[in-house]
Length: 397
Image (cartoon, rainbow, N blue to C red; front, side, top):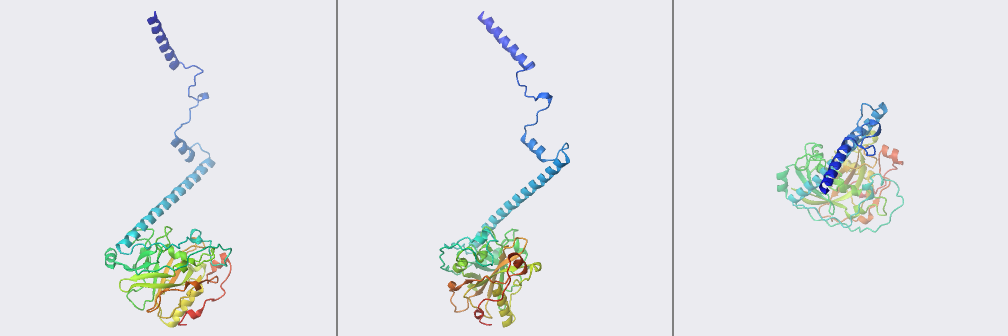
């Protein structure tokens, strides 16, 4: 009887299961929505596509909304891709620069302990040539860095790139670069020392410079202002930082530039001026500093220096005279926005034979009356009120 009961129970269970799958109870949920409508797909990809891409049943307004959304997504993807490309490119350029420095026997110098990131580097429009506002007191070690002569392996560098002309360095910074020269001022804007395409380019001199001519008295160098600190990013640190009680602290700790050439060896150049240069006539006067590689007379030299000093954002104790050799470092700087193509330009002169390389930085002063250009004054107000620098510093004047 027990066996029959078990068999009957099992048959009953099977019959019950068969009934359940054939004729579901009204109390059991069927998984189908009421009214006989099909349930929407739970696939997130399908749901996303339906929500983003225009559908045939969408109204005109809904289609327009989705079209705008697609444009916004495309812009976001494009922007992110561009930023990633830039970051990867900058990192690669930094590695290439370090590699060239190592091969050339000029490793990256030790960073200066007095380094401080100027506020205007993070916010380019925050510190402009205006009267100083509320100042932030600070304690800064203003002891100038000590230079060591550059001893480059020119033969090795020439094997890699015969366009090599010099090596430039600012002690205690990441500015430690080979200087090349092309047949124009375009190629090395986007090609590295190996000749590979690069968003960072490399440091180069104007094609107008004749490195073998002793009458070529002004070497003009260009380099990108890279956010990772390479190439001419540190040229930007000479822009006075008016948010601090000592706006010229970077100049006072790094008052010189080193440049070495295969024929002339290592030389020190004393920085004497820094200017904001306009490059587009539509914004006012364009100061032509990019073609002046030689000086035909004393007056020609004096007039050029006067134009520089009238525009300089700071004054130093460095004097000048006809016959001096100059070094010009130019990089991008956009204090008026990237739509206004301006440059920050640093000027230095070579230490004369028998002259001390020391610079009395304690007497350097900020110039709040630098000569600028129309568009600058339109945005920031003010006007140029004439020369205010000490012309006795121009010995040949």
